Each structure stands twice: as C-alpha cells, then as structure tokens.
Amino acid sequence: MIPNYTNVHVKFKLNNISYNHEDLMEVAYSYVKEGYPYQQELGNFLLDWLDEKDYVTANTSGSTGKPKKIKIKKQAMVNSAIATGDFFNLQPGDKVLHCLPSNFIAGKMMIVRAIILGLELDMVQPAALPLIDYDKDYVFCAFTPMQLKNFAKYLKRIKTAIVGGGQVSDAIIELIKDKKPVVYETYGMTETITHIAVKKLNNFIDSDLATITHFKTLPEITVSTDDRNCLVINAPYLSDDKIITNDIVKIHSETSFEWLGRYDNVINSGGIKLYPEEIEKKLRSFIKEQFFISSIADDALGEKAVLVIENDKNNLDNSIFDCLDKYEKPKAVFAVSKFIETKSGKIQRKKTMELIKL
Image (cartoon, rainbow, N blue to C red):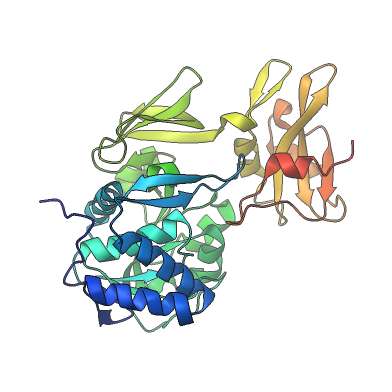
C-alpha cells in the first residue's frame, strides 16, 4: 500500500529525535520563529508539507529564463520518494545526511524521503563544505557538484551519494573514482520532482562499462524524444501529462538515454550544429575558472562559437583548443569579471552574454 502524504513514518527521526505529525508541526514553528536561516527554510517547508493542502509550491531554477513558482502535488512527491527508496534500497531506520537548502526541490525531497520512508535524517547547515560528524556512518546523501568536490576526501563514511544541480566535471569524477561510496549523477528538474534518472560515476563493474555515459530511469519511468530530439518523460505517478523538456538527448532504450545539451544553447554555425555542453566537457580539465561556450552573430556563418571565461582578462593559451574538432574551436574568447547566476548557483548564460561589449 502506497503511503499517503499525511503519514509520518513511525521510524522517522530528525537529528536523532522521533516526531509524529503534531510534534513535527511544533518543531517547524520553532524553527521558523527562532532558528538559523537554514532552519527557518526547513521550518517553512515542513509547515507547507503538514498543512491541509494537497500541494506545495516550488521555484524553478531560472537557469534558462525567469524563475517561476509551480504547484507540485504532495502525493506525487511521495511517489517520487518511494521510487528513489526502491532504486537505492533505502530501508526504515537508515541514517541519511541532509546538507542542501530546503527552499529548493532537491532539499525538500530529502525531507520528504525521510518522513515517508522512515529514515533518520541528520540536517546540517548547507555550505560548500558541510560541517558534519565525520565519525558517523550514513547510508545516503545528496550533494551539489561543489560540495562533492570539497567533501571527496571525507566520503568513506557514506554508502551511496547522489549529485545534482549542475554538471559534474571530469576533475570531480577523478577525485571520487577510488572512493568507497557509489556516486550517481542525477537528471531531473523541479517539474519532475528532482531526479527521474541517474548515472553511475564510479565503482564500475564490467557490466557498467558499455553504458557508462547513460542515464538510467527510476522505476516505472520511460523516455522518448520529440521532433527536436528533446527528451520526453512519461512518469504517470509524477504527472498526468508527459513532461516535454528542452534537453537534447540520444535515446538508447525506453529506460536509458545520453544527455547532449540544452536545445536553447545549440549553435548553428555554417549549417553545423554545435552542442556547447559537449565542448565544455572536453575543455573542463584545462580551464580552472568558470566558463561556458556561447555564440555571437557572424556574417559568414550565421553564428560562431565563442568562449566566455569568468576572469578580469583572457589568460588562456590557444593550445587548449587542440582537443576540439575543427568546427568546435571557439572563434573568440571573452572575459567577464563576474558571471550572473541564479540563487541556486547556475550560470545565466544569456544575461552574462549581455555584459559583453562587442
């Protein structure tokens, strides 16, 4: 029997204390009134989750446009929590670590999973390097790429970790390749109630090697593409309608796909389609600063690829572009002292491009 969103699992604990529905309401009020900012965010979400409405509101990331509030059915969030629990074999009483902001969907879902699945949740202040009890073992944790990078040497006490909210660089993958926990990159968005698919990043076995670049969907989720080659998600327990994305993918089966980039970012240069995210992946190990690939108008090509780096000046050696195919090489490099980012830390490419004086 699928739990209802009004249920609080009898084995649920928050920071080592058991709570029922009424107790959790009280602690939520306490957090909102007297807590630190991160506890106030947790308290506000708990009050939303425990009220009589059958939905919560959440903000989209705003990485490709203006952030917007959307309504998400609480029962769909319960269903998502169960799917994650089934995929990662999470059991009542498992200890999990929560170090994400509770005002974004990834943080909200860590709380929902604990309440519904009966997990023992340790909540710490979100930070680039969360301060935790390094002698404590955890079954499950979710990180941002920056947190995973900073936390890499402390991962031995964690069994399974997921990372989302941005691309995971080759440098980070190198850091975790020999670490104990199995680390998965996630694919998802606010509209899909966090991840609907995951991709293993380390601890490979022989059967993994043929599908090392593939995202695998969670139970009862299938995928296809539209006429733009963008991902279409069929997840009946999350949404009554199919979810049409702007992510260009290569489908390998109805439950696996390879992510290529955003439709919004594709560059048509002289009739050749360039995928900025694919170019960025090739360059990431050579450039320590933040950067991205974009385009500017060109009389001959229509659009030409350019690289934008977060720096006061362009200090790149052109030899780093030798790893790229002929048509992928940027035709110009621009330096911007500070990128424009969303509240969740994602680069706003179009707004940052507006800072460049051509």
